[in-house]
Length: 375
Image (cartoon, rainbow, N blue to C red):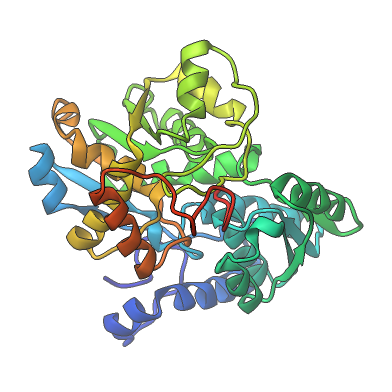
């Protein structure tokens, strides 16, 4: 498709689709920079693209009805976080005159900050802890021009340093998900669905939940476009069930380490209050998926759709793969493929082997807390 269609990017006539596919994220980042630089009439442009909504023949066959993929894995930086974090970063730079953005995320949120900083032409600092020393994204941050600092033994230490740096003149700390402008930015996903479906609501929306930023944004978008009655399946893996526990008890769980299905610390210690509020207001249905099924879904989705996602994104996909009968009643399904930069082909092979063994227990080389955090 024309890379400029239904996006805020300029069309590139005569550019081969194969070239765009091979260098998609590089293209998007360069085009975003050009768009932001020339947008004098738009004081707060968006640092994200309008992603495609694609029908999945394999999942549709599995579920027994149409299943559509909202492909936010194609966002600059590789995840949906380009929406909300990009919105906040653009506001900080254009409206408050910030010249340095600071993040404590060595995962998708940090990548979104680094991409936004590069597109907006400002400095970016990512503060990592000792457990993140082996994270492959550190080099990705540097290639985007970000400064990478190491502070303390775990995420709390790095986050405290990042917040202190954010208090310095012309600097700003960028949270991972819990900010009104981030929620507002994520809500653009539903506005795109409304446009792509010509106002026809889906039978349900299926998404993954970690800290609750995506859920908060989707619920805000549903209210905004008049789709407040659409059920939302908030899918969580076994060790990342803060929302499920909060919904069951009616209160926020005690802050604690939470891990994705592959055993990595998400960094955040609590679910967003906005996610709890919208879960009480709208038809949000918590759904737990086993860690092994989540890991298996990464490889299965790669086989089916030729798209690589990380385990936290794959939770929603695993729900469709393992419990298709649950969604058959809804007629049509939209699943948010929220993406993620924290995976490689070697990871997918390793996760598939662990899933085939029927256990998501971590190996000696992949213990919780050793590696990257997810936000």
